[in-house]
Image 1: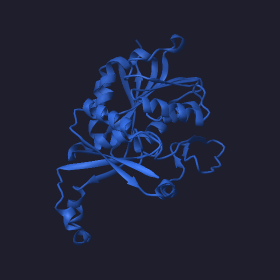
Image 2: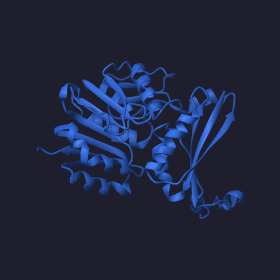
Image 3: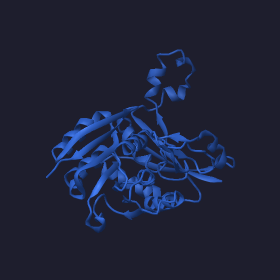
Image 4: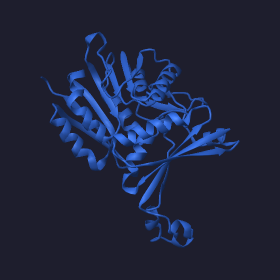
Length: 309
């Protein structure tokens, strides 16, 4: 089995933003940030660090995802380049072929069902899992798709969807990647879900995952943010999610309310803690009320309510 490692190298201070982008494609992101060595030097492990690593350039950092041979890595590279350009991040993107016969299956032993919220559990497709009476299973294959529920921002969104969604809701997921959030909403009783992403590979993956989870009420479309989004039967959305990054959420802020009902719920994530207030102020200026924020490992998921017009 052959794999392609796609490695994105950027100025070290930009690595968190790159990791946030790459988790859209695969939650199994490998990070190389040699600034961590400075911390290790102050511990008993300092003497054990290889000299080559000690002398490595700490002004840059890298993040990698691994693509199986059944997928076209050039599509991922093209999409990543586009997203780096949107963020004005200067990135060196390289491809490395890996030929390891056992890797195709050996990595699976590191994955297990992940409790995303009180009712939602992400389960790898090869595992038999008996759900509790109140649990809903989301079937996702780590390493073989875009985003599978194990990243902090996905879990934050899933918890908030679980808390705020109501049966019969219309749900919109902007920049949906794998479609996992639309699947979560569908499993929790949403009547209709629209998942949109600018990337064709993502849209294809959304459709495959929706089918695998028997979610016939999910529509998947290619759209540059909201450009191709239309209201089904003229009905505004009850709940909208955008698990992207702060800069893209800011771009959405002036327009997202046009697609939502009064008192509708907006959930945004993919946001590092340091940019929380920037996002809150932007959306408050666009007619939203800040309702709640969850934090996990330096990331936050924020809930807003669209004010009455």
